[in-house]
Image 1 (cartoon, rainbow, N blue to C red):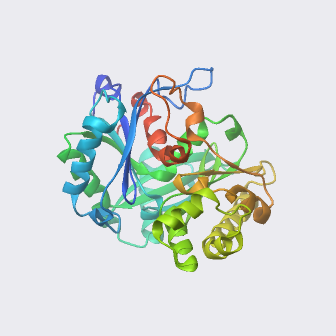
Image 2 (image 1 turned 90 degrees about the vertical axis):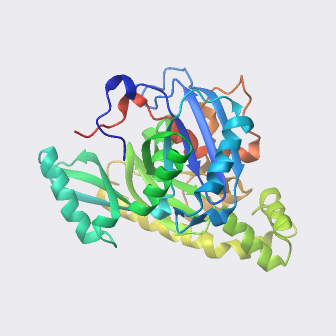
Image 3 (image 1 turned 180 degrees about the vertical axis):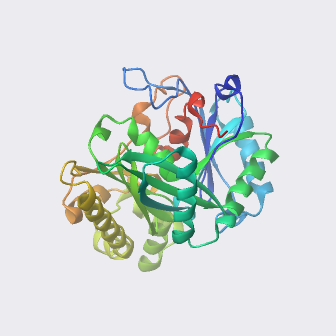
Length: 366
């Protein structure tokens, strides 16, 4: 979902990524930030990055209902709390995947106008709310051997997108891209040398865990309720400790061997088993459609909730596939500014993915 009818000289101007979480804002701007051209040894250089917290009551069901709270937090962050300095007012924003609807479909090979019409007809059948209440976008993933087009539909409630656009306007920012966090995390993974093999990506956010299968593009996706904040709350309730103590137990010990390992594991298993069940379901779907030629060989965890000790081992044990924790900063040159502390690296996954958008490749509708 991008701006329309913008001249080429304007499209080439830089942009920065703004990721709005449950109670955090993350900002990243990169130089030489095209994901499509990385791979010759040169890393994009970080020009600015940082995050801040805000009152989570500013957002309700994905809609920014108190934009003044976010605007004040963003102004403070951009004015004095960033490392480095933004050089642009053009912004790309990500909406949590659990607030978007996505579906993979196949249609006959046809021209662009006919594809648009076919996509809308398909969307009317599958989307849970009226198209008049949605912003609909799609991506052609590939042409099948039977000359069909495989397409991924993404639809986001218009009231959510409109609230993000209103925030950008209040900040005097030019919003040029609004996309699902699935797209931004997929873009980040696409520059990983291991992305040549089909992979499952599990993005552990604050309140949801977004699961997708990546094979050059996002092929299929799903979402499970529960993420990093949910982990902390479950530990707090079971161990009858404060939220601060629960957060410490999660980040210091997690699922690793400790005196509290059994209790922590017991607290988190309801969510983790849902993640495992959904991951297995999606792997089966992929294997039924593509697995004979390109089997899944890896699982990569991303997002702020993914750095819990022992999580990768737990998933490996239950999924019988190699699981590795993805460091989103490994592809970035941040020596001049210095990168975030280890515990904060994963929270920048989507902001980095947004910052990797090449301004010259922003799709312009006629």
